[in-house]
Length: 255
Length: 255
Image 1 (cartoon, rainbow over the protein chains, first blue to last red):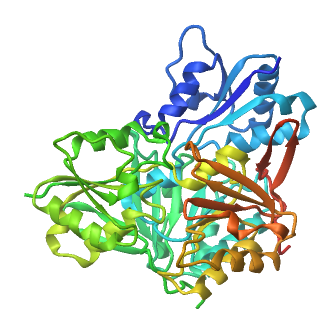
Image 2 (image 1 turned 60 degrees about the horizontal axis):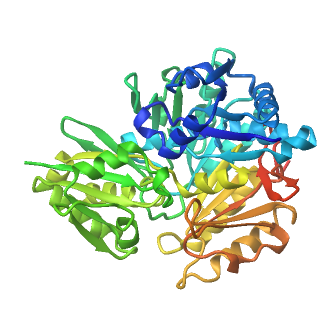
Image 3 (image 1 turned 120 degrees about the vertical axis):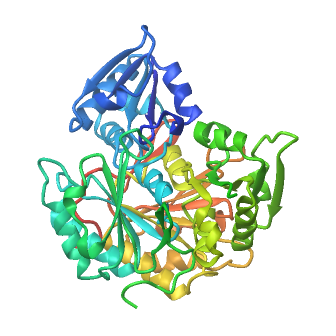
């Protein structure tokens, strides 16, 4: 008998940004798999068990969750943010694709969540108000040359760029290199938003012009949003600046 | 005395996908502005008033909401999905940018929501599991040439592409034209997801290969997601196919 596998997102960490739908899945499931700090965001009952694992073991974790579900358990795989954006949903699908046939019979229910770029954008205004892209800056799973190609395509196309996984101990130089590349395609005045832990008590938001953007501002919990040539900054007395990208567009860089 | 202006998103329409944070804003506000069908999703009290307007009057609506807030009201501007993605947050920021100084003193609180592409992606698997972009296909606010340039940049860069505002009575040919352009850059087998009203009772999801993708499948309530060359489809017996984009990448089209 095949069980059920939920894949949910907690949102960026503010409990008030987690959907009722995801909370209902948490209530229904009995076994939880995820990166420890994400599982810590849930209030589990004594009859619910958790299998925490390291953040880099996505595929193993997906396999373990699918095995438990194929034995009949109601399982919940927990991501931060939205599970479909650089997170566990793709790992679970990949495991099903390469796994035993019976995993395809599992009732797979993926539930969306608030992904980091949306939470960060809301804190500063509306930088994603027009065409934008999301790029993972991690070169663990793709060549750095591919990342450079995409940054270039995005800047030349006039997209606002949201960068996930901007930096880590093992990947210290990539964000600085990305800023360097983008300075060759975009004006120095384009605003760069560093949004850390949006909506959480340890939130830290900083807006810097691309010309002076300091990669050291980011850590693993930061989502970086780089404006397009059309992104604007509104100054306010005694209040944080507003950053937004107008709904209309004249075409952006490259025209 | 300046009031407060909330800008919220209801998510795609399933009440269980609206965040507690947005619901709390609805409870606090007394005057509501928005497109009628989005306001209809809220359960308002008798002491709360609503100002419904047409979907194409964003800037007027933003101005009216800001005027009410600057007189001291607690105002709520309501978008579908996420207010920061092709929705009201950018219109409110634009109105502040061009409006009287006192509008900058208003306590502006933008709250994120589940945007359509995330809800649609979750229903089919994880098509946004790797680098992706979001493009509004409406040429009301930007030249069609800009849209073509961005579609080309996205396809050549290997991005999965989410299309918002794909079609309307006044814009009947743009989606077909976009498919035609993309067929020149991507294999005919690339999956195209038409996700209508994700999570609502009238939901309709359809997956078609790019070579045969029929623009007439979409309506105004549809978000269209076009895979990259790396997006995969998993067949299942008696269950809908799973569509996902692997977390790793070899670089996509153009390499």
